[in-house]
Image 1 (spheres, helix red, strand yellow):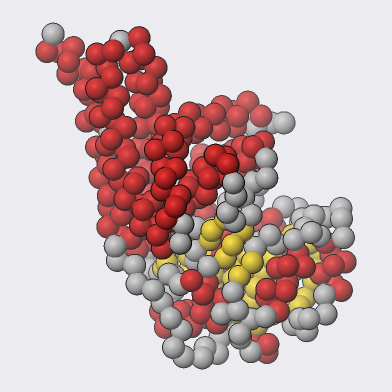
Image 2 (cartoon, rainbow, N blue to C red; image 1 turned 90 degrees about the vertical axis):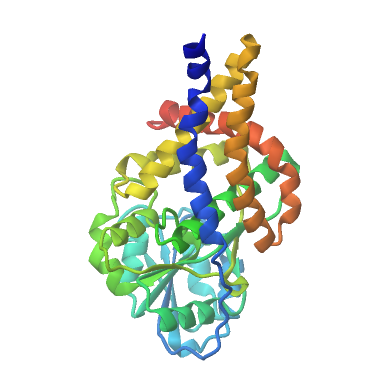
Length: 365
């Protein structure tokens, strides 16, 4: 009987690595200090935007960039059209509010090649990448450049948020995205960066050229994460999180559930090529906990004696999740999202397994 009870409770012990890792990330979030640019930077910056069929979004982005509080002779904007079939290239070429705007066509195919095309022809010491469906404030470039001049990192990981939407699906997207942003910031502040987002990412041109061969061009996505992991493999690289509302970029969430699944499936497709220990351990531990949650949820329906074990697993996972989400949602001005925390916690394990199943089923379609 004692052995049976021990077996029932073994998963609660196995969940402790997740609990410890996430609490460590939360400790990183407690170290956050907001950065304010106090001096006028003089670094020449190249803003690279890879675009594919973005005729609807591009004008709004270019208008945001044209309003930047940064000397026009100290930055360039490079639009790289990635084989669009709409008027993306034409709209970029005709935009007249930026005299430092350069447009070109991707010499290869895909976002990674498009970014590489732009960087190879860029003049900036510092590269900033963003996406065509993003918007930013007027001090975006100035604050990133000032942070770079003060700290001299190889990579600067900057905050991203998605536009507010309604309904359970929209709230779930926002909450998940904020959770990922919390892990991104916390792990970077603990000097164990595991994530970044190419919608708001800065790095030196020199660092990119040195590591560009490690970006796994055979995989569609991952232009950002593979660069981060390659930099981490070089012990002297400095990867920093930049906390500032002035550099916050807003992007759009997935408009349909199908597009949401496809996006998450692309994220999963690159995991098999990860080389970074921190990212691999976090991924394995998280997936193991999610599988345990689902299995014990189903098992306790048939064997009520397991209900307490299932509840313990949910609580142990939820405590660090809640702390990270609470910290990040408050910093992002999204504290009302915490009302959705409990429903999201119940849905999340089944959602992750659905994405994995979708990825395995449709990856070759």
